[in-house]
Image (cartoon, rainbow, N blue to C red; front, side):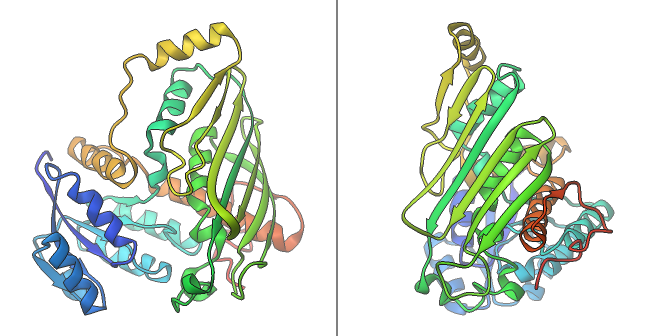
Length: 354
């Protein structure tokens, strides 16, 4: 599959960012349609980007045979039924976070993908940054050695204007708070570097806004490798920033503090010894990462489909992220650490909604 893929984007909030990313890849994708229940948003997207077709009905969109990929950017409570419908129609599906509101949801979508001729790719665009790609390169080259500790800070600011959107701040529509809708990207980025999580101890609180869902959290993780990590997140920081720090046997790595692009440069790498520095330089010699963020993920998706391979972000990756969310809510309610993996016997397997 080397030809351009025809894409429709559903949901014109964050969906505008997806549209811009597809426009960066004209040799790989053709934007053919947009869909949103609000007609002026459809008209705006078509007018600015020249998208030929617009819909206010998702069901009507799926009757269009000239679409290869449907990109779902709707409010979270609509993700599961829409992705299921896309896969059952034989189209590839791309879906914003969170993929679902429970592990049961994600497992059901995994089964749907297995039964379909199409592929499903969840969105985790932070993985596609030139800074974090350098770190990943060093891990793949076995330069890092033993992982010791890590920390992730997601310190953002959200207030009344943000929560004036009716579906935000509610469990039934947003499916959760800062753990689900904000920090999930940075947490996924850490897990993509350090591997499977074995134990989670967490506290969540609603301290910043008058909402149902949490807007502050503090979490401790134990990884299968033995590494330890802390996660802190708030929506009440005066200055917005995101930061990852990782200490390995042979080097330490620290991201920039860009709130929404922590995977991008600059990343600081500090070798533990001159010998480690030489190995780092050798492993990175000639390394040229590809496009970043959404464009990087979409380019990698096209390449995977062309090869008949696995998407660059899989349903299993989304399951790991939802598993962490499930464990955070369970631990915060029980006051105890939660062991992973989580299966159907777990009390929150079917969802964490109160």
